[in-house]
Length: 224
Image (cartoon, rainbow, N blue to C red):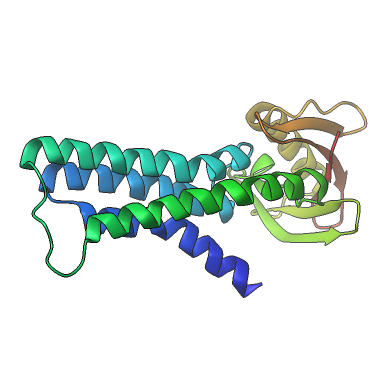
């Protein structure tokens, strides 16, 4: 839904906008700005599944307090370098920014329990980063998902870039899953891994089978 996209943009952009208003020096402003942009880029990349999302909940929920703390540290450092801010005749911008950041923190704190509850009990789509990136010679032919009220499954069909037969694709992919992603695939070509860190834990079950096109990977997201 568009409302969640809008809220996500606001969530990421508020610290960046506040720092843009507060900064007064080139060096401190650039350093703090670069750190804020880096953290924002990590949040966006994790949302888009460009990087592994095993600690997604921790990264999301730490974003507000850590960025606000970084802004406070940058403001104090600039105060030591430049002295007291000149008073504004019409608008107290620093005061407005402080108010905005307080509201931002309060809103994040209020939303955090609901987010954790939703993430803990709702069906989730397993990330493709538990299989990708693929080694040379293999490519993703399709990537689809199916969800029910209890779980979500992700299906990836992997083929060879040089017309390799399916059995070779399966063997190459199996070796890759074991060596690069730590899947302990046995004779039945199934395995299960635990994902998550401190706040949310879940299991992903992988099943590897052969198809006419190459290999089929089923990722089944389940909660313990």
